[in-house]
Amino acid sequence: MAQLLHALTAAGVLATWASASAALSPQETAQVDALIRAYPAFLSHVDGQALVWRDGTRMPLTRSNAATYTERLNNPGLLDQLAVPYPACAPLRTPAWNVDPGRTRFEPLFRRMYGGTAAQVQRNLTAVNWFGQSVQVTRVNGVDRSLQAVAAELPRSPEFRPFVTPSAGTFLWRTVACTPRLSVHSFGAAIDLNVARSSYWAWNGYREGQRGITYRNTFPLKLVQVFERHGWIWGGRWYHHDTMHFEYRPELTGADACQNR
Image (tube, rainbow, N blue to C red; front, side, top):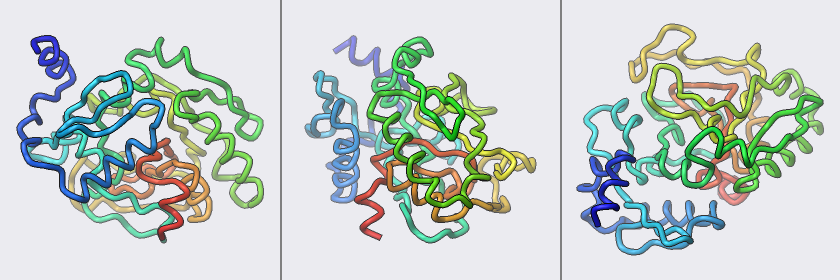
């Protein structure tokens, strides 16, 4: 028990333990079921208030008690990662204040799947041909195969080419600028597209969480939907918009989610 408590403290989980006292709601149950289906090589089932991994690891299903949006981003519970529905393949709309579906990430989940250090992640990286440019992504969870499928489909619409090339990067072990949070690029499960066609909320001097961030986007919906059908979410659906950014998050999107639209 002492070892478990030490591990949870190191992961920043104990701060949210108290929120797990109640049974999961039907919506939370559906969200966790989608998470398990998305990562079948790692996740097994739910037992009470814990997500059980195939190796027997138990991860508490909690929500953060943080008082502010930014504090919750920095120290979320696993249920916070799933709480905001991602509008997969939906029409483009300006996101409401602080509505960032998929931007909240429970870092211990990603570290266990993809690697807890840069060296561990790098052992699973492989090259993908991105329109003549070699990019490095992880083989874990089939991220490489998914990105290859996206790359095979996009040329059917030549008008997308100015948006998708050159890629601004894939794997890079780093935190999100001005935060303690690891970027999904750290796990080799994200790609940034052409910066010249992109918009990013912080480029205009806004503070995280402030009201009135002006939304800007030039990316075509049909391009975004190609990624979404293959399990990727898009930073252009966030209030804190990052339109160059796509990350592999099949618990939130994918072919099934898009067909339900």
